[in-house]
Image 1: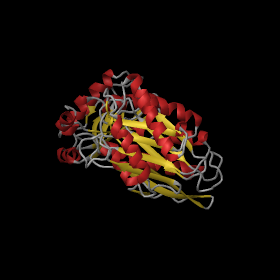
Image 2: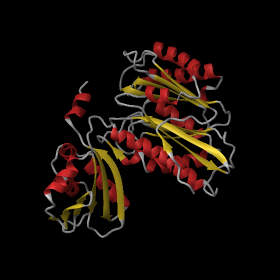
Image 3: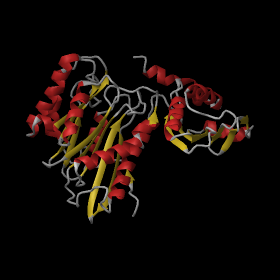
Image 4: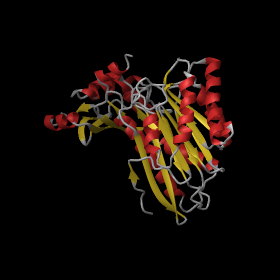
Length: 402
């Protein structure tokens, strides 16, 4: 099996079209604010994963119900307004977005998903939304992936895209996607929107399991600031246009497909961390020696979401001492006499005793824009986990003072 190769683009598979436009939701005409993705294939299947926040935006509630059917052909997206905490009118506005999009595309409203992102608690300004839907229906293109990725951005500094192609049953299968996200990012799921399109032939239930696996290793393994939003959505369409034998776990190319899907979504997730609000350093956290994977994961989440740790990472302070503090109160089992920590491969703490590392070697790591912190919780257990996060600078505060 040749490993998939990934490109920095949102390559739309055959049978998909998309577009992004400035409709007027955002004041700046240079910033596009609405996007549309549509499959021209009638039997397109869909899978979705959504926020675990108990307060969910109107589009999320609609999307959960639509994805239960496993059938949808389009998603209409606006940025600049989350349509969350907007009451009954917010529900009516989301429904109108689906209905108007469906009418222009010749679909039924229950085939159209809706996504919104932006400020919470603001009523939707529907006149520009209606105008945007009309503009998008005219602008749809098989080359519209980049415009779509730009249109869903909020505090993102750049569009986030990834694509790959694989061969299944001798047929070329394309997987392309985009996402947005830079703040309010925390696992379960990360605060973001993401859209994945493939022309693979696959049943909705199998697509759902493949998506769940991919998200568990990517979007659910990142944290910028510990906040879970009201609008998180990952939506994956498969239109079957490649005409391969239907993919399922027993298919000889299932592992290849899963690997390719994992790769696209992982790449998108890492782009979110690298674009975290105000970030200057990408930190990979690893834990081992925990009593279970769940305990290891819990420990890493506590560290990643400690602003005492994150602000330490922003400078050249070796924040391991702050990590030790977090481990002591986060509720996981540790052996305090066997706790060990490494920065990259440099030992910092061994069996709870400072290792007195070479000062210049440590300085070099702390000044780099990417490094790994590995922890052994000392219990002797087989539990392990990984989490991807970043530092927190004063720029994060400035961005979020609006």
